[in-house]
Amino acid sequence: MTESDDRHLQGDPLPARGWQRWAPGLHRLRTYPRAWLRDDLSAGLVLTTMLVPVGMAYAQAAGLPAVHGLYATIAALLAYAIFGPSRFLVLGPDSSLAPLIAATVLPLAHGDPQRAVALASMMAIVVGLICIGAGVARFGFVTELLSKPIRYGYMNGIALTVAVSQMPVLLGFSVTGDHLIERLWSLIQGIAAGRINWIAFLLGASALAMIFAFRRQTRIPGMLVALIIATLAVTLFDLDSRAGVVVLGEIPPGLPAPMLPWIGVDDIAPIVIGSVAVALVAFADTSVLARAYAAKTGDRVDPNQELIGLGAANLAAGFFQGFAISSSASRTPVAEAAGARTQVTGMVGAGAIVGLILLAPSLLHNVPVAVLAAIVIVSALGLVQIADLRRIYRIQRWEFWLSMACLAGVALLGVIQGIGLAIVIAIIEFLWDGWRPHSAILGRVDGIKGYHDITRYPQARLIPGLVIFRWDAPLFFANAEYFRSRVLDAVAASPTPVRRVVVAAEPVTSVDVTAADMLADLDDALSQAGIELCFAEMKDPVKDKLKRFGLFTRFGEQLFFPTIGEAVSAYVRTFEVDWVDWEDRQMMETRPPAQ
Image 1 (tube, rainbow, N blue to C red):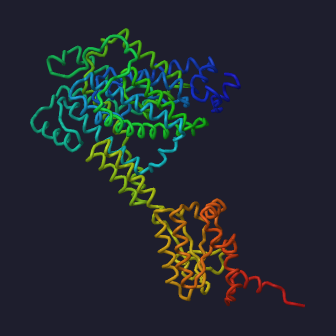
Image 2 (cartoon, rainbow, N blue to C red):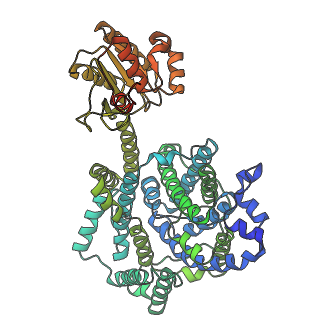
Image 3 (tube, one colour):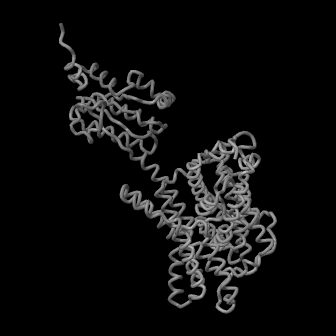
């Protein structure tokens, strides 16, 4: 490997000019070092052993024919290889998206598999358009609005929903119901009625045990081994006809031609709503995984380009009869461990799947769906977050219960409604910190520089007639009246008649029109009581806003002080208050005597 190749491997940033900005993978292919081809080829073949069973399994979980999971995988890998910025991410069908797709598509499909495929494909196209639009508009920051407890809540809810939905398939029978509670009750009734197909369950349970046994052995593809053994058992003992084990059946010959799926006008609204939820979850997963691998390799993360790459992959999946896709936290580590260098690994995997569909589709005929259910269940369990939730429970109890509320929303209301609830809770959580922020009355503490919260330092001394009030948030419409009431409460609680209020405004990063009007009303109310309102340590951008609002002229420049200390000194001089600061006393005690 040359020195320049080595630098590129360590994460030299890709040029971001012209077309290279929009197709970073294509630029990477143009500068591809031949020395990497052997590693990417071998890693791609290893990755294929996971791509095939997982792709089919997630298609089944989404309520679609299994082969469409392979179509989605092929299209996503090839599109992301061109438009995706990450060298390592593996995109394809995902366990966190399958219940979202099923919840949107199945009620509209009315049992028609081809209609379900058309709806799912259109959903992928809408997801792609949303992601590309958000990337071009530089909305890559939006997933940062979802806190970790909220993300854990909806992911745990999705994991629970997926596991419950696949348990009947593992047991060899079907259930009805749109939500988790309905399906769980139907599952219990089916078990009680003796509807279990014990042969199908034996195949699925054995696959589960085998996958778990080989989970830590990256060199042994446990999912593929389980799938091959179960398929051989069905074929050798004719279990589909003799024991009623459900299998995949015939795979359509050839590859799908690109086409625009058609849906009805009445389907548009639910498809758009479901697509928004899918886009949010897909990008949240992709951005987290991209940041994790960028930290390991030294690559630079561009969340907006990740959105574009994710959108292009979804568009491709939708046009080729696939469904919505995301990055994979299980297949990406497999590719890395196998020695993947670039997205050529994914292209090799896509090519291997194409070869399987074209040359040997009959190999998939006897794959038992119970084994695919086992694969989905294992993947869903990988979404569950327990250890970190325990830590959150210890250090921030209310955020733990926030996570539980999101989990309950997904479980009880449905996946899409639960995601919507998570977003609403995230917005409320964000606004709450600004709506009822911390504030403090400040005093002087002997031996400590500056002015400090008197609730933290009860020994702090207050300046007679002066209230120093600190507000730890921006001033905006939601907290303006609360600010006013807190200031008036501080004035009322003063042990001495108040002459001046100093707002320690260093934490105030913004002021809107509602808050500005409130400041004018507060100034009037304080003036009627003979109290002056002034400010200290206010940032220049906030002052600029007050100038536009006309408040800076109203108060007068002399009432805006650069520091709290200067505001106190000005107050002491103006009102001739008998006040000696601790620092002044220290200076007097250490000053040498006059000669």
